[in-house]
Amino acid sequence: MTAVALVPFVTSLLLAAGGGWLGRRLPPAAATRLLTAACLVTALATGFVLSVVAFTLLAPMPVLVAVGHWSTAVVRGHDPLPATAGLLPATAVIGLLAAAARRAVGVGRDLAAAELTCRRLGPAPTGLVIVDDDRADAYTLPGLTGRIVVSTAMLRALPADERRVLLAHEHSHLRHRHHAYTQLADLAAAANPLLRTSAAAVRLAVERWADEDAAATAENRAVAVRTLARAGLARSGTATMPTAALGAVHTDLAHRARALQEPPPTPRPVLAGILAALILVTAAAAVDTSHVTERRFERAQATFAHRR
Image (cartoon, rainbow, N blue to C red):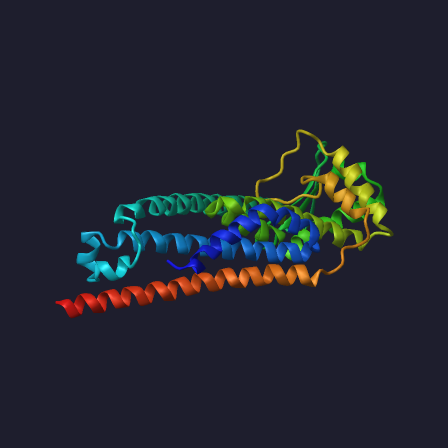
């Protein structure tokens, strides 16, 4: 393995340390898109490189040599580790794949349940469904068309201008398909636990994105702050939201209220460019590792054939 193969692991550590910071510094829409892309690329690159390391270490085992017809000396190169050392990364790969598969099944199950709920709620031309419920709550359900679900208790708790802000927030979730970002980031974090910080940052960023969209419809940003505060206080502690749903009053209200008290976020092209470059470098490292490994095994097979 070359030093380039370490890049995805370094990126994982950088995102573990700085994912939350990036999510707060970048404008919400940019943070959502870039961090989701970073999570996906890093998870895939890390898993791929770890698989390559495991296979390369295990390749000198007689049973694999008999199948692959390659020279153990060329495959091993200058690596002093025994073939059995490959069992450790191989076990890690299997464990991470199993975790990612479990998460993927969970996401599929949650989306199917959300779609069934949307169908039970019936047609909604604007996507809004008002349910008669004494428990104050509001959330957005993903699905082929999706639904915004608001209880009558929540509507009664808010004055007209704040109701408009709340609904604008939920419409933003529906319009931009925010659930796709959170689910992809969570899936990446299942495959690489070092990405959990960044996945949490994506979940907060989509709420901030919807907050900013909602604030743009209000007379001023103070109305959006009041909406968060009043809706958060009104929400019933017994209200339950489907697992796949997103809701204005379900994620870090204090931080979001403070952010809305500040001026609207401005673009940060340098920071966004650095994160985009990190994504590209990580992807390039995986591609380079693939090419280097392919050439090594081609030489190993050629050497094996020549010696015969």
